Amino acid sequence: MSLLVLGLVAGGALVVVLLYNRLAQLGVLADNAEADIAVQLKRRHDLVPNLVETVRGYASHEQSTFKAVIEARNAAVAATGIAEQQQAEQRLGSSLRQLFALAEAYPALRAVESFQTLQASLGSIEEALQSARRYYNAVVRDLNTAIVQFPSNLIASSFGFRRRLFFELEDPSEAAAPQVRF
Image (cartoon, rainbow, N blue to C red):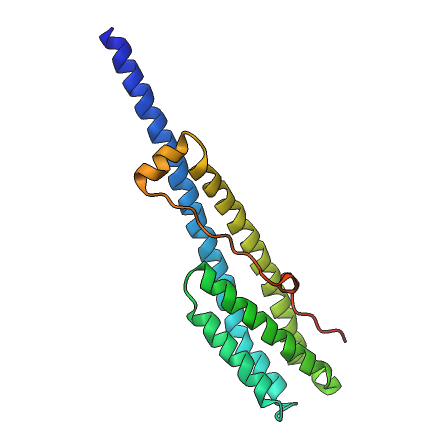
């Protein structure tokens, strides 16, 4: 009888360890995915001043647009947490679309190689950012599912695992990378 009880206790402990490790693994993957998003956002933020300066050389009288882009970029750089980042990035995306719309009015600017290079770089960054967001959301989905499913929900609540927010876009137009047609 004592051996049976010992076996049940050992089996229960093994289940707890396995469930805890799965939750911990998903938490680490979510942290890593969030860091990947941060890397792509930094690349995007670093590119914005170059874009503004390039366009400013051709459309110096459009100060309000430049100011809006720079303010949105600074807010995005300062944002912390997924919810605040989402809001700041949506504002930045919107201001970048205004900047590219402005660039449409200047054919000479669209022909400048440095502008084309910056635009291509931004497109590449936007694609990598979308990929990083999709991966993050997939990991968060798995983590949130594990946190609410039985019996891992018992382990999650006992050890303080919390659901995470998805990196969602409130404005569907944000899903597309800014585009300029030549």
